Image 1: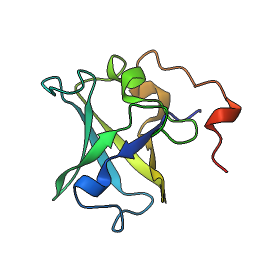
Image 2: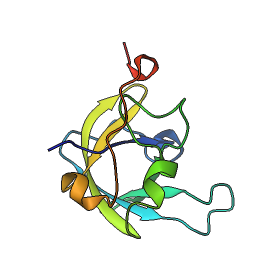
Image 3: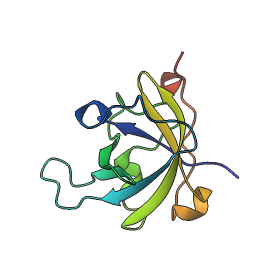
Image 4: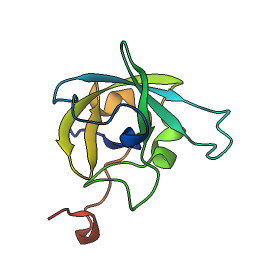
Length: 117
């Protein structure tokens, strides 16, 4: 089963990522009323609320991550994810339940530009 990856961006505007660890659960919620991005997906954690957003730029997505724009119309109003890696560049996560939790998701094609060295 192929995983669907996403990156949490903007954590420094909230609680940072020092406390985040692999296997921690996150909740993704569409934020249709976001005045800056109509495809914004907020990321929340129990007890804290908003901890960041799904990255929506080629400059902020890590590795094989889907951007928020690619995920937005393929997920429900809310879905679950799990942290895989906490890196200096961002927090890499995957959708819990794999591709079945993402209607019509396709694995992103590998591109040498997406590889982080």
